Amino acid sequence: MAGLAHLGFGFAAKSLSPKIPLGILLVCPLLLDLIYMALALFGVNEGFWSHSLMMALVYSLVVWAIAFLITKKAKDSAIPGLLVLSHWVLDFITWPMLAVLDDPEGMLFYWDESFRFGLGLYRTIPGVILGEAGITLTGIALYVIWLKKKRRKK
Image 1 (cartoon, rainbow, N blue to C red):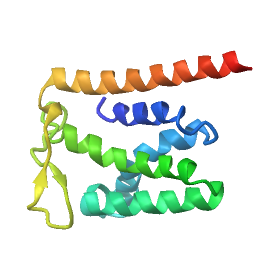
Image 2: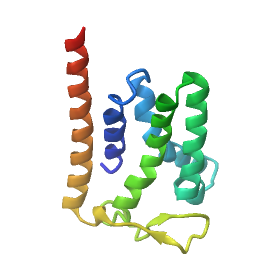
Image 3: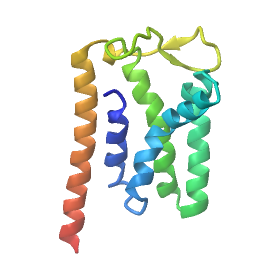
């Protein structure tokens, strides 16, 4: 179940970036996990390359730059970049995820594995439910509200 909340941010962002396809907005907050899975396929299990704050900032800037080259609009290109960064922020709030994973570690700031931290919302099952359901459903609700407003304007 952990991970659905990232999609909530993508749904919520649609009202801020109506010209960007919803699929892109849903993939951006999942990008760090997709990078992690791709690296794992090649035997690279170093969390630094996918989930450190430093690399999240790098990936956010890369996504922002690509979006800017495509859209030529600062606002429209900022949203995908911020969605990539939102992954790290949400993981920081939820890690360590002791109720979901047997991993007492927090989030990485940079390459030093000994420097990990997190707020630990997902230490308990109620925290997981609150975080996952709350953020995901709020994001979907904001998206539905935006869709209804958009349809009324037509």
